[in-house]
Image (cartoon, rainbow, N blue to C red; front, side, top):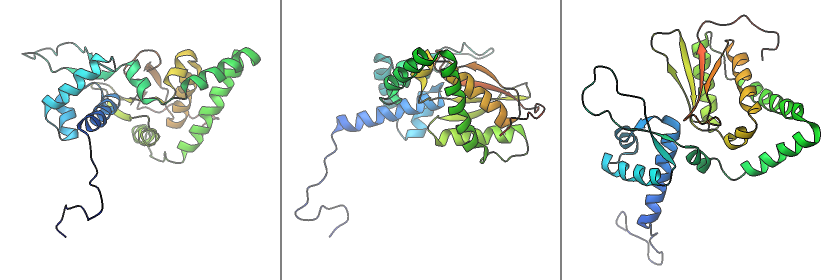
Length: 237
């Protein structure tokens, strides 16, 4: 039988163009959430599509308020029109977050109403402490920069679309998380974000500073990490 032919008695699977377009658009949204701010040309190179095809998907995502153009200003000394770069909106992040956010939010509201706000904070700290213990085994680099890269890899494996970027002219890096599974819960309960930052500081051995969060309206959760380690603390994992 010639390669590519369908065996007798079997139907050739049909892929409708609309279905293929939907899957591609979903992939574009995932990449924008993980790598944004990102240009159509960069997305096209990653997906193996033409920039025109990617711009068509971006336009539809923008119409649905799932992505937005990121305004970073015009670089000094650059001529011409700067390339448009895209980030995922809060609605776009919600599209990727699954359907359990409402249930989780209701559960935390019940905990707050029954046991008080302190109970929510304790829950957040215990939940993130378990995460920290799991990640601690993967962070064995000798310096802060190496541990930050390992932490980003661990977070990426768990679906946080995480990466580490150097901060030019400083002795610091930024840990960026383009997706957060609990974003919409954290919008009402920022204790989750605060506890996460505390865990990052203990894991990395460096005082970290949260610059932006998805829950707070940022296009990514951005954590500044000085590369000079902080003195060790007794509660380090």
